[in-house]
Amino acid sequence: MEWVRFVAAVICLLFAAVMEAIAVYGVYKFGFVMNRMHAAAIGDTLALLLGALGLIILKGFSWFSLKMALVVVLLWLTSSISSHVIMRMEHSIDEESIDLDTIKM
Image 1 (cartoon, rainbow, N blue to C red):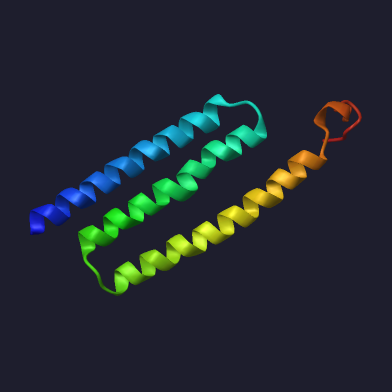
Image 2 (image 1 turned 60 degrees about the vertical axis):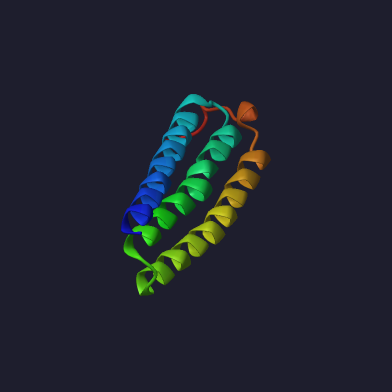
């Protein structure tokens, strides 16, 4: 039974690493901010869930697994709120109409 838990945890962690690699590639590849945010959402949701699930399976069900589940819920809530705020800001700012020569840095 221990091998089954270990194999299931390794599969979850490997899929989490693959999803995170896809998210990093998407953030690097896309030029538009909203496309980058969508690619980063893969790492925020699916990779986080799979990584936490793999660690919970590997460690066993205890207080640690409850803490990991609470971390996942907290990060899911804050990630969606922060990405919504960034999307609204990006949508409201028209970058093409801003004259960058007049801005003092």
